[in-house]
Image (cartoon, rainbow, N blue to C red; front, top):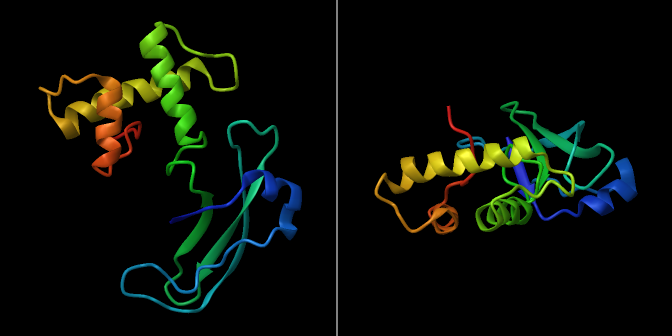
Length: 152
């Protein structure tokens, strides 16, 4: 389970494993609520804009075994690129007709986001949604969906 908190990736890189991560006060898994949540090591994650792994802290509930990984709030689950970058890249493609491949995100990743956006608009907003892809992007966010999440 990911625990999204306001953490600064740059500060984590500078502090390394000495960085003091916020610890959950209790287990968030439904029905558990145990206060015995302990450190469970680190996991290295590649984030957009950084040339080395960022080691994020993990915690584990001693009672139910649920593992939590700290993630920055600026990224969606299963994504390592900040939300604003994803939105800007899709917007650039729709306005300019070409992908912005100048800074770190591959054309393939951007294409995957756009395909997922189109699919999610059809699934969650309906086949007759015709206000445009960026409007659909914002509508999905306001409805609580991740616009570029790949579904099975």
